[in-house]
Length: 308
Image 1 (cartoon, helix red, strand yellow):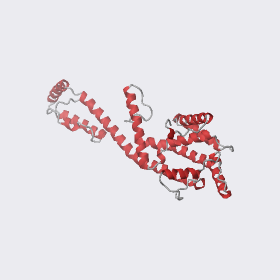
Image 2 (cartoon, one colour):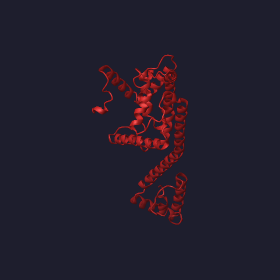
Image 3 (cartoon, helix red, strand yellow):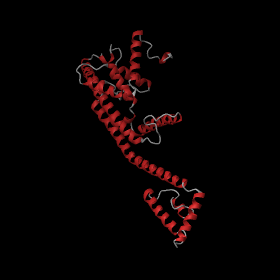
C-alpha cells in the first residue's frame, strides 16, 4: 500500500484508519488455533440472542474459516494443501530433534498418520466452523437480502450493507467486469438477491464430507503400512539382538563343548544342535511370518551356539 495506486486506505480519515487497523489486528489474532473453540462457542451463543451480532466477531470468524478452508475445496487442491502443510510440520519436527526438544503435535514424520489426522481435523475443527459460519451468515445476510428486495421494488438502491449508499453491489460488479474484460451483460449476478445460502450450505457440507470419505479410504492403507513398518522394525531389532550374541570366540567355545557333549552321549555331532536351532527358527517364523532377515542364512551356520 506504499504505492499510490495500491493504497486502498488513502481516503480514510485518521479515526477510520485507526478503527480499521484495530479490526484487522483482532481478525488476524483470531486465526490462532488456540482461540478456536472459544471463538466457536462465542458465536454459537451470539446466534441464540435476538440482538445483532458483533461485526468484529463475524469478520474474525470469516477470516478464520478462510484460513482452514482447504478441506472445503476440491480434492486435488485439498490433498495438495494438506501435504504442503504436513511437510511444514515435519520440518519443524526435524528441527526439534536437532535441538533435543520433544516433538510438537503432528510434527513427527515417522509417527504421524496424515489421513487419520485430517479426519480428526475435519470432524472437530472444519465442520463445526463452517456450520457456524453459515448459521452466522444467514443471520447477518438474511435481513440484508430482504432489504435489498424491498429496495429493488421501490427503486431505492441505498442499502445498509454499504453504509452511506455511495457504493453499491452493482457498482462493484461493473468495476470487476470491466477490469477483467467482461461486459456487463448480466451473466454474473453479484446482488444480494442472488445469494442462495441453503445451496451454499449443501455444497460446502458435500465437499467436506466427500474429502473426509477419501481420507477414510486412504487411512486403511496408511494403517496397514504402519503395521507392516512396525513389524519390520521389531524383526530387525530381534535379528540385531541375535547377531550381537553370536561372537566368533563364543561360538567356537560353545561349539566345541557341544560337540564333546554330543559325542559322550553317543549322538552324532551337530544332531542335537541342528534340532534345537530348527525349533528356534520355526518359532521365529511364527513370530515374524517369514519376514525376519538373516534367518535362512544362519540355518546352515555350524558356529551358532545352542543358547542363541
